Amino acid sequence: MSVLVYTESENGKLKKNAAEVASYAYEVAQQMNTTATAVAINTEDSASIGDYGISKVLNVTAENLKPFNAKAYAHVLKQAADKEGAKVIILSSSTDAKYLAPILTALLKGGYVPNVVAAPESTSPFKVKRTVFSNKGFAHTELKSDIKIIGVSNNSFGNIENKTTANAEDFSPSLDENIFGTTSVDIDKVVGKATIADADIVVSGGRGLKGPENWGMIEELAEVLGAATACSKPVSDLGWRPHGEHVGQTGKPVATNLYIAIGISGAIQHLAGVSASKVKVVINSDPEAPFFKAADYGVVGDAFEVVPKLIEKLKEFKSQST
Amino acid sequence: MHSILKFNEYLSCDSKKTDLKKTIYMKILVCISNVPDTTSKINFTDGNSKFDTNGVQFVINPNDEFGLTRAMWFKEKQGATVHVATVGGPTTEPTIRKALAIGADEAIRVNAEPLDGFFVAEQLAAVIKDGAYDLVIAGRESIDYNGGMVPGILATLLDMNFVNSCISLEIEGDKATAVREIDGGKEKLTTTLPLVIGGQKGLVSESDLKIPNMRGIMMARQKKLHVVEPVDANSTTEDLTFDKPAPKGSIKMVDADNLDELINLLHNEAKVI
Ligand SMILES: Cc1cc2nc3c(=O)[nH]c(=O)nc-3n(C[C@H](O)[C@H](O)[C@H](O)COP(=O)(O)OP(=O)(O)OC[C@H]3O[C@@H](n4cnc5c(N)ncnc54)[C@H](O)[C@@H]3O)c2cc1C
Ligand SMILES: Nc1ncnc2c1ncn2[C@@H]1O[C@H](COP(=O)(O)O)[C@@H](O)[C@H]1O
Image (cartoon, rainbow over all chains, first blue to last red; front, side):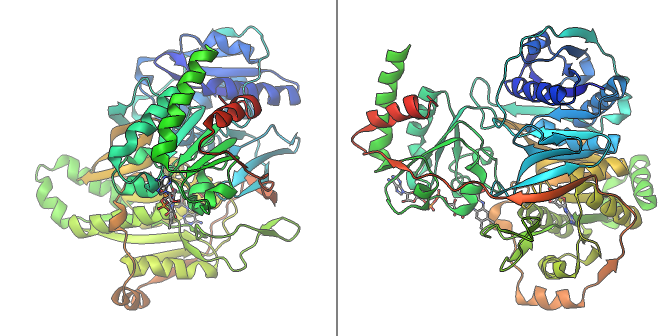
């Protein structure tokens, strides 16, 4: 009857979001008077998830599960849920988790609620709070099905330590070759750089930066802060930056601790996608830019003067604080 | 699914694939969800239990618009019949008429309020079984409830292959090459028809999006819009109430000549650096 959580990994190591989903699973388990079990696929350091209240880990080690395959992973989780008799399954909001969640939902004939931002309001009936209308509203949603699948919104619940020992158990699901359905032929991914999905800080540039040649200072600012870079929609439409950096209602959602918007006007579609970020800083030359109404801190000024100065000041600050 | 199987068997056992491509057209279904325009003010009514549609303009879900445009590309370049389907009441008809005006050949409306993603997927699965589609193009998510679950559930119910967050799709015979977005990059996948994709921006370029012209709008009036009744299905989730985010507290302005203050605020007050 335990609560099941899928802890994602990359190159054999738990991903950053594993701690948050584990913390969430432990909270749900507490509410339901049971324990939380993690499923870790090809993960060497899965035992460390015990730090977040997980008392058991099902370790799956299989060559054919490298790289990620949504359908196969959904089958792994289904079999794990069957084995554990789990009625509640916790997933993250990563692109991979959002890919496999509906497959798992259909396999288990369950209910799935994504974008959940808080611990369940009650577990019987099972009610959660999630964002809707691209962060312009919240819904309080009841899961009526026997099996409940929850997608936890990035950075919404936090990492909560509860040190226990995660008892490791090997788990070998049976996976027929023909269930994979798709074959990965190439992965093109930036390495060693924070991504919009998992960064604590995102530095984002808009059309106010005039052209792609001016992104050097955006990248430098991001580097000083250990941040990911992002952009507004027109910037990617114009080809100044790759599409993967486009954030907003029709792009990637951003839910970081700090979002710095430079030369971005703050159109409603942009704000919808980034408003889940905890703290927003706006740098814009126009004091009337709508973004100032939606931000926490603002600087009115020319980005080409403000940003280089900010980089210098931050470098000083970083060198003092380390 | 009869004709899909025939189509696939035909291609895999025949060497003259190129000839066949000319004669056998793909059948594509584009799933369209009817959503509030991106500039809509979001309000709730009836004791916060319902979305307030008052004064809201409804449009084709942006992710579906990319998918529809890609479907038109297949139709023009490789030959395909393109149908669109929506699950919704009569008020959704202007939105599907727009899809017909953009160039879809026929439309299907399942006459039911979309209760939740599972319910909608069951309805669309029935439509797809009936129509024997080779390719189903849905969107990564609807921008209203942001569920992102219809295409994946649908694909699984029908045992069709599935690629989500799809930003590029090429089809050759019964083989498909797709690119999906991943966190921090992209992944190229190969798969086979019948296939469901959850599409998004990137599937076609922004400048290829079509605005219906007068001729398209006139032609759309002649096209078939089938209204079908829903199949029996349950919803597994229910939105009980809604609320809106608390209004933002006032912003703190920092002088451009005093960036030390900004760093101080971010470090000591907001505690984010
Ligand atoms: C269906 C639909 C979906 C959309 N989805 C999205 C989405 O997901 N994401 C998104 O971002 N947009 C989206 N948009 C577009 C959105 O409406 C805006 O057009 C867009 O966000 C504007 O981008 P921007 O702020 O970079 O450019 P602009 O609106 O041109 O703003 C540039 C800003 O830079 C400032 N500026 C100029 N020079 C300087 C300088 N030297 N220093 C500092 N500041 C300067 C200006 O004052 C201005 O505020 C969507 C639109 C539609 C219709
Ligand atoms: N009511 C509906 N009718 C037809 N297609 C839908 C409907 N709802 C969702 N879809 C399709 O499923 C995709 C994902 O929607 P959702 O799961 O609601 O986020 C949409 O982009 C549509 O392609």
